[in-house]
Length: 181
Image (tube, rainbow, N blue to C red):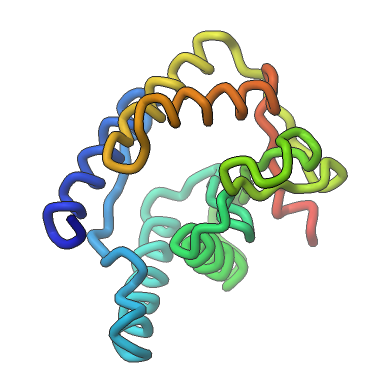
């Protein structure tokens, strides 16, 4: 059921998925869908909080690279799109003391059958960074996906992973924001 119990479950799933990938997540505790059903004021407050926290992270962590959702949110999910827009907005808001690169992961167009799982794709001419992945990397990705038990059945997760593996092979594709300048 929606509400606090689902939020707690999803946070635990995120932590599990990140652990499988060797990532240490930083959770902001903002509401799913940024309280859109509550009107302008709650959304505005949540967006302001998100901007502030992303800015603080960029200032404190001084990352070399930032990876966020692309404009489509990978699956078109509006929360992913909002995060992408805010991270990109903060990145573009100033010249940072510590230079960093911004990347958006993507699936090349034509690699997944249309209408399959709601994945948005990007024309390969925009995907200017390609990184080889090993069988071990792919197993970690599979284990990470399987942490999201409240969102998908194991069968759906296996279908999604097979489709993504088929589309990407042993390469992960990114669009580099830097080359947009």
